[in-house]
Amino acid sequence: MSGTQAYYELYRQTSVGQALTDTLDDLISDNRIQPQLAIKILFHFDRIMTETLADKVKARLSFKVKDLNIKLENQNQVTTDRVKIVSCNSKRPGEV
Image (cartoon, rainbow, N blue to C red):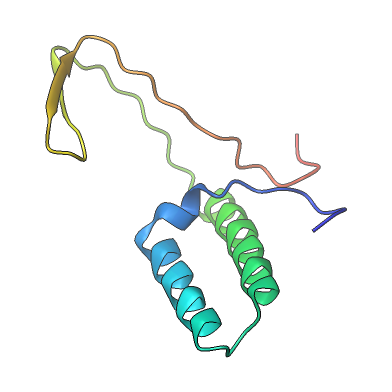
């Protein structure tokens, strides 16, 4: 999609994003849509999720932890005194 703003794909990993991706995969497998249409739909999903959350969610989060114990996806547990949280800019293209 040349000439358009790129949006983060992180919302594709949500339950809604996974359901959309699975549905699009099924439609492609059944030859009901072309893969190019599925890609356009996912780009649209990325844009709408980013814009909607930026408009509707105004929450901020601050916290301190001590002796953090994290349970990983593979069920292993890790104890740490440091955590890195990564966030993404959710502003629309052109916003400051």
